[in-house]
Image (cartoon, rainbow, N blue to C red; front, top):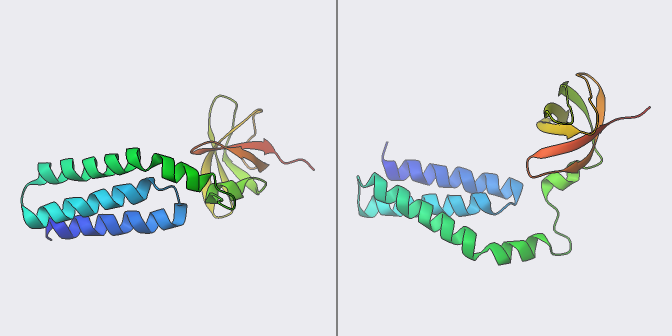
Length: 142
């Protein structure tokens, strides 16, 4: 399989996943992969150049569009899909502690989670907050 086609597939996957998450980071990586595909079409076999160009494009887009993405994410009506998990119930799959993340299932997804108390496997939880990749949960009462 041609390398430009692999770059194109990676770019497509990143952009599709970006549409599901709305973080903007995967979009920039996807555009970087597109740039790498273009470089491969122009100069086939220059893998190092493709990687450098792809990474540079993604980095520049991340740095220079940060004010724009911050403005969009803080605008009225914008809601990150992870924010919707706050208030939802779930089940502990792996014990959750204060200093050791555990695993919880909320809806159809599994997440790393921390709590102010130890919550054992099988107990019900409620999501009370979120970090960048870790949910904050409490034991579900009554």
